[in-house]
Image (cartoon, rainbow, N blue to C red; front, side, top):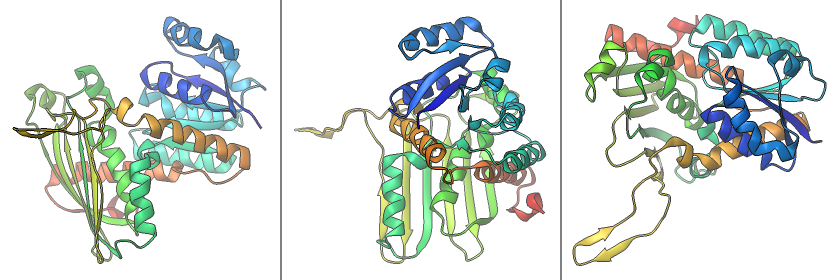
Amino acid sequence: MTVRFAIVGAGRIGTVHAKAIVSNNNAILAALYDANRETAQNLAQNYRHTGCEIRDLDDITNADDIDAVVICTPTDTHAELIEILANAGKAVFCEKPIDLDLDRVRACVNIVNNTGIRFMVGLNRRFDPHFLALKQAISDGDIGNVEMIQITSRDPGAPPADYIRSSGGIFKDMTIHDFDMARFLLPEEPTHIYATASVLTDPKISTLGDFDSASIIITTASGIHCSISNSRRATYGYDQRIEVHGSKGMVRAENQRPVSIERAGATGFTRPPLHDFFMTRYLEAYAAEISAFIEGIEKGIAIAPDAKDGLQALVLAEAALLSVKQKRAVALSELTG
């Protein structure tokens, strides 16, 4: 089976997914839509050889020749688009988050489940080969029982003010990837979260109602805990590390570099800089998640991360924000009932 795709939203992340789709032998990029037609045209011209056309949303929704749709539009459009496409029977891949409101996400998840469509949410770090190797080491029992996890995720700089204003804040936009990774690596679901956050890099971020520095501790019923360190300022590059400590040892995924060499001289050892952007650091992960989505459609098998995973990541984000505001640990049951 060759899966015929449409992409809705032809901006930065839409461009990444377009490349992943056309690079997969089991997929065809058939259509593009963007509210800004010029943006759609700029991307479509790169894929004329695939037969890619610019279409409007209704055409994509009702088209018999479109099997799956990748949603890369602004967050406040995600849930409605998911519901429209699900009711039309399309397989849907949607960038995170599904929505910024928990009740809205729950309603959307119900529609996804009721229609039975193939659905994936874009929490791409599960597909990073380095993090997958770390997960495999845990599954193989190399470090025994997991006891502690440390996730470091720091950006080189903050996004523009307009982006921050509409993003839902650091927990729902940035840390949400780390919340999903915590769930991916922990042997049991989190039960409590404690978070502290502040503005240390740019006072303007405070006026936008957001934070740029955060520390989070997640715990499970048996006492396993995961700590997350976030910052919107890392002068040395895009800092992405994970360490998992267990009863028999430790496994760690180090930072990645575009060039992995090391030089030595009289003054010591030096290595090239880290990646400076998430789209280069996680390029392999973006391609792998689209491949997994295609495989799920072709074989009719379960796809993850799914709608429930998207919901649970947002629950953790909402609980972290509540923890910061009320300066206390929050039980996730307070948000889930």
